[in-house]
Amino acid sequence: MAYTKGLAEIIEECRKSKNVKIKAQILKENESTQLIDLLQLTYNPSVKWIMPEGNPPYEPAPKDGDLEGALLGKMSMMKYFISVNDQVLEPEVHPIKREGIFVQLLEGVSPNDAKLVLEMKNRSIKGVSKTVVKEAFPQIETD
Image 1: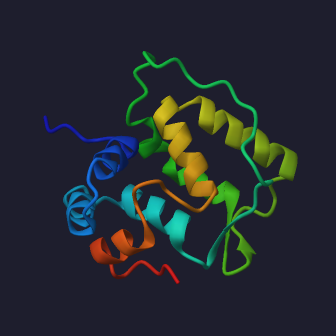
Image 2: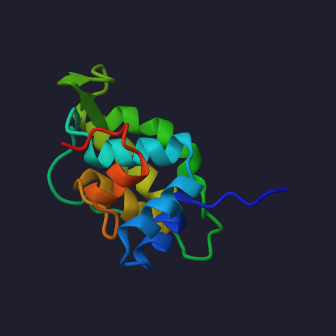
């Protein structure tokens, strides 16, 4: 059975290089729907996070909790936290409930994945610039 890298693992691999082409190659080699979604949620200007500014208080999962890769299965939850072209995807969810779901997401993934989600929300992934994204996946809108 093939090993599937978690999203934070892929990003961490990119962070180890200083070369845009190498980083782009790492992203291409690990292409998945979830990775594309992660990059879209971070850099596509038509996507807006509808969460309060800053990072919410949450209790990180234990490092030995065997949650590496859990974010792959939870990427579909992102629809609760964004609008696309100014249209909220899940408008019936009350803002307080939305924030609770977000905290549950952060607490239900590995600490590295939780940090990655917060970087996505804050619109900048350390070590993966818009230039790297454009090099790897020109179809992703970043401007």
